Every structure is written in C-alpha cells, then in structure tokens.
Image (cartoon, rainbow, N blue to C red):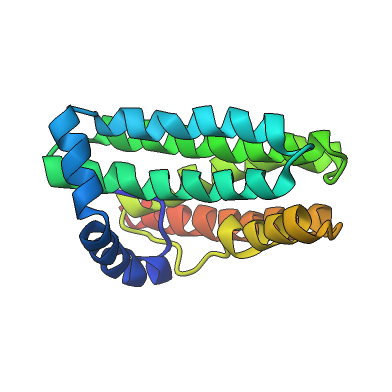
Length: 199
C-alpha cells in the first residue's frame, strides 16, 4: 500500500512498527476486545488537538504531553489496523486527514499564544499537505523521494523548547521546516516528471 515516506525513512518504518506492535500488544488486544475501530483511534487525535488549543496558554507543558499522546495514537491506529486485519486505503486516508488536522491544531495553539508569525501559520498546513500528497503520489508511481526532513525533526523539538522553557524559536523552526518541505516538493515534482516521461 503506498504511503508518504521517503526512501530513507522506509528503512526504519518496519523495525519501528514491529517494536511498537510488541510493546503495545496488550493495548491493541484490549481495543480489539472492545470493538474499537482503528479510525476511531485516528479521530481521537483531533479531540486531543482541540484540548491542546485550550490548554496551550495556561498549561504549555501539559499541552506538550498531550501532543506526545497524539503521536502515540498515530502509531496505535496503524498497529490496531494491521493486527485486526482492518487496514485499508480508506483507513490510511482517514489517518492522514487526522494527522494533518492534529498538526494544524497545534500550529493554531502556538499561534494564538503569539509564538508563531500568522503568515507562516497559514502556510504550514498547506505546504505540509502538498508535501505529504506528493510523497504519496511519488511512491504510487515508483518514483520515491530519496530523503526528506520532516516536521518531527524540526518543529517538534522547537515545540518542546517553547512549551517547557519558553524559548522563542518556534517561528524560525516552522520557517525552516516549510523551506525544507519546499525542497522535497521540488524533488518530488522532478521525480514525477521523470516517471511520467519514462511511461
């Protein structure tokens, strides 16, 4: 099933998924016994994202812990889908929509606190969505992007530094992340053009 990973990321995806599945097997079994669908786990990220918006001002450290919980949920939905045999293209789409909504809500939360320039805040979900969409299309056509620098390598550390220490580097981190995603978008478009020409 196509995904939105770069070629270098794919080297680590399966080992990570296997380790995560072993560690969370009891939780997955419980969710299966309760009849919880993977899409519900995906959607729970949005609920937590709304809470993050509400608590970012009064309790930024709690907001970051909640953000970490959404990353856990993001992996848990896939583990549940694979273990229960309920993985599907539709489920993968729901997962992507929920991931993007979570990212956008976190950006909204930080922007409302004045820690992110509004123009960059508006641009971020647009670039993030195009970036992931093009990675998916490249993988679908067998023209993967060799490497990317995703937001978890730039934006997430800056979010930690902002919420725990009040360091005002979030705008710079988002700007850098958007620039790096733009580079990957350019590579993806080049790869797609090559794949289309070859066909």
